[in-house]
Length: 252
Image (cartoon, rainbow, N blue to C red; front, side, top):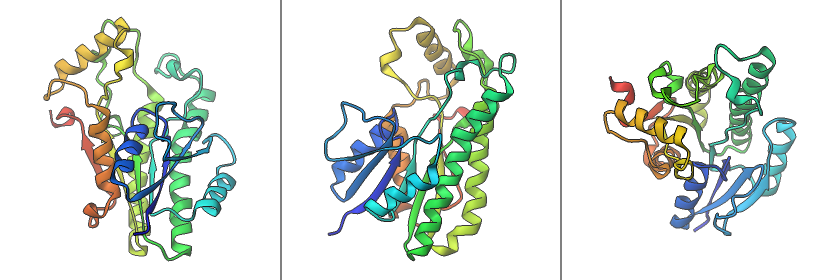
């Protein structure tokens, strides 16, 4: 059986690497990891292609398609950001930073999805596209979870993730009749175990867990499995939706 071609943008990251791992176990996918650098712990069976979302993405994605073909599945787990990302609170953010982060994250996510869809239509090929949004693309950030930490609310993040949610609906209305499905996953907080040695992060986890109905943050694999579901034929009648995976956060 011919393997399905999967492009995973940000395949070396926290969630992207887990998506890659799970898909490779199924042995029916050819995984192309598009990222700035490869995660050293990842499986050698994936194909790595260096990809930076900050410039010349038209030509880059066309080169990837020319080399590997139009994908059956396109998953975007990328998280491009500037060095001053931590200064994106309402008090600290500057126009230049907001503009650059919106361009590198929101604009690249939307435009790449459109390019993949257009190439699929040209080849008369069905494609499933999954983007990564957030609960903070749906609701405002709860400032109480940042108590006793140096972390602050992020103005840019809510703009970016909210834009992805609405773009998903707009794109689905245009491309779904052409055999292109597009959906997004809205995760709640996801545990990063390597950060647990940091006091400010432990406090964040404690605050978040006390606010979450399920009493904890998500494991990366729980988000990855939701992404894989939306990318697969098991969700063949789902398009234009935001799948909320948040342990009940937005339910209360």
